[in-house]
Length: 491
Image (spheres, rainbow, N blue to C red):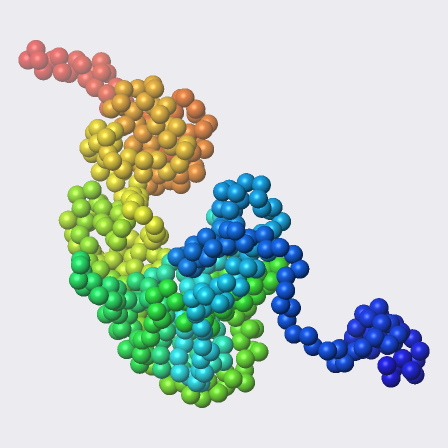
């Protein structure tokens, strides 16, 4: 009103007061202001008949029996039981009435209590799924997770690429975070996954969960005390759970700014993640400095980021590691090997020597046979390939499968097997791409002999230049020589 008296402009006065111009015009014309209006209290009468009066007792009985039942589901049931009695547009009114009933008679809602974190007290660790980031490597889409570590007091965070919620990924992520942090808090808090805990007892005597021994060993190495949240209570790890969404958004925005989601290798992608996380941590420096002052010193030695176990090589040159089966060179059949397992790779050791490295496979049970390990042994066992349970491993690609099928059409099964294994064995010295190019060139004319002549030409043919002196022979046939010999014979 003061602004209107000085400016005499309803629109400007309404903007100044933060109200609608029509409301301002009403007040200027003499209507009572909000503070002048008599408060009549809540209305105690209905303005229209209760549409749900007849069915509400039954609805209340249902809600008392199942308080968590949704109003939408109950209303859809009413529409089915009382066709034509209610309109679809009445659903909102019904939901408001059910909501009001639940506030008066329903169960008490769960409360969440904000915790007062202390500097350097604990870190929270969890795994973050990254399918929505749609990262791509040279060999296709990269499905992965991030081990995500957060300090609740300062919200300092760290993340590292992994492939599963395993003990190896926990070990790698935790140690990477501690090294970057440069110190140790007092507690390491995680959920009750099988990585950290297991069910106590067995059978009918199961009672709660207890910590895994190797998990306790890792924490003891750094002087950390274990802490877990309740089963099915992710809000108790609220800082790291909340940070998942913020970090995922930050990575997505950085990828959009980068203009591509393709990386040449996992190392390049992980370096990109480190840069994003470090930038986010620069905004937390003040509280992080307080956190660093309260951290304990970091031990000098790092816990090995691999697991080891002993395996025996079967008669098929196979070993079992976890759920998977892998092949090793056939000369180690019957030997006991030491296998070293990281998140991505397996190393097989014999007498301290690395004899084989292979990619670590994840998922359900499977067999991963390298044809190079067994092709020579199969050549010495005619007929073994035809019925071998891992025969498909002997076809490095679709072209090799086509070669085998073509040989079977032209030859007997035994000869087709010998021809195929002989051609494949050439791949031990030659590149498969070179062999495939010649196979495509020869077509139906391909055979073991033609491939050997192309890649293994005979080397035992020696070109010899001989100079023969026949003078001694001529002298032997001369007339004088003949007569002298004849005279001797006559004598």
